[in-house]
Amino acid sequence: MSTRPNPRKKPKGNSRQQRKKAQRALAKAGARQKQKPSPLAAQKTLMPSSEYLPQMKTCWPWAEEQFLGGHSGLVNSVSWSPDGTRLASCLEDNTIRIWDGTTGWKEEQRLTGHSHPVYSVVWSPDGTRLASASSDQTVRIWNGISGKEEQRLEGHLHTVNSVSWSPDGTRLASASNDRTVRIWNGSTGKEEQRLEG
Image (cartoon, rainbow, N blue to C red; front, side, top):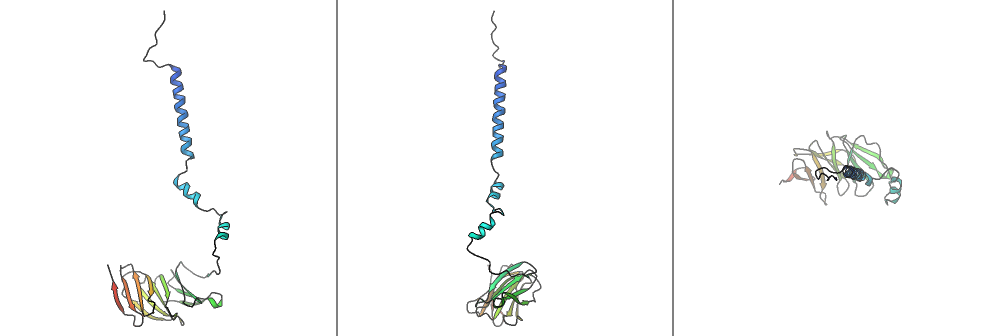
């Protein structure tokens, strides 16, 4: 007498095989997930390692000619004199340094007067004066030969980030965190115009 298979009961062999297949599929999926690099790892692979830096330096067309050491704080800005013989740098230590290219780029002068970090420095078009901008809320004009402070331009209500001479050297523009650009008379130091908006 033959017995009929129960349709509700699954054969044991099939269920084991199915479990094994499912386990193998999960294992493969996990392995693929591990092999896939994360976005962070992909970024790291784009960064040059130290072993490639010498090769990069030889391929780069620019070569360092001079290293100006002696700065005691972060250097925020630099400016060439119009004749290219001097360089001015301004720092977080509230000073401006002038470097002389005719003497092997030795420090020629150190201008002090600002009470907070200096963020911008620029030579006048004729090379006789320097203008600087600072977080002490002032713009200062310096004699490019003696290094003495000639004028102090006050009016900004917050950090002054940038300063620029007009092409003829008669006016000076300054930009500040007080959301204004101010135009100053380069001779009198008086504010001529305030740009807001």
